[in-house]
Length: 337
Ligand code: EPU
Image (cartoon, rainbow, N blue to C red; front, side, top):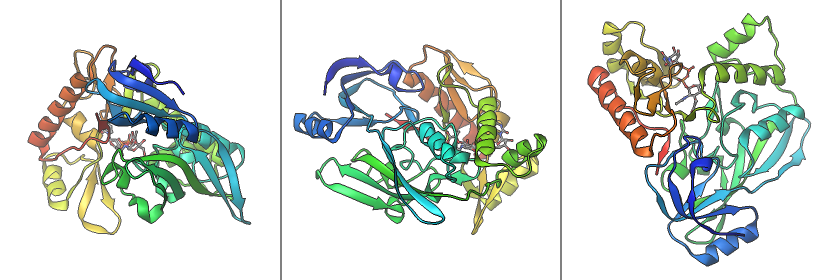
């Protein structure tokens, strides 16, 4: 395994930010991992697909890109299969593999950028599904103790775009492999209105998982910029959860506010951050090469030469403005390095 010096991270983050890593290596095997730990270079920054990170500076120490591969069918019952995938597999490749085998559960999560190992870190979700719905366990390596650990679903403390790996264990565990339980008799999850409407408009009433996946991809492509063409990391902020009273107060002035109930919670509602940002006048705006996407205000984009600090400044201006106009605090979904 090769450890390179002074490497541009531009090809390794989907914002396309040109920050540098003091040292850089690619992890392809357990042997590589042992060699890395022996080299004892600090600090260590763990990178998957680079699709949920904003680089605001050059990184000292070692940036390690996880490319541990391999998809396996581990076991099966009459109704379900247990599969596993190396943390460095591309998430969408795993989704396609599952669909090719007619294993259901991942189709609503089609085309989410990033790797399999990054998926549990923020409990990826889209169109009415979340990783936690199919998650069985993961294997990780504790970087400080050198311990090999297994995390079951409850150990991961999954929440909305959240897990233990974004909190207590942030940057301390290297996820090596993930196990998922999928169904052999898929039933379409049409709980997300936009998805159900799209299928109905196409005249599809009982979609199979491939049709569902294709429709999810169409919706994503129509709203979300392709990182290969325009640097971005999907939603930059989380949809905020606010007290019902605040939601009602905003609705008095803006009756078209988009808000969703939180099942089992009477006190809080979830607001569409994209709506708040658009209403505050930011959709399509640009400060230098940092911009707010013209079709989805929750997505910040790099028009070419933006630095991580430019994107962060834009994000902070949006946060301050939304706070002032609506009294709502927006929290980044993206990891800021
Ligand atoms: N909206 C606006 N203006 C905008 C954007 C959205 O008014 O510029 C309103 C729309 O009217 C819509 C509502 O906000 O009613 C929700 O919009 P959308 O369906 O596009 O979803 P989102 O809440 O903006 C979330 C996830 C996405 C995920 C979609 C679909 C978060 C932070 N984002 O976005 O995830 O693909 O739902 O499930 O939860 C990501 O995490 O990177 C991501 C792209």
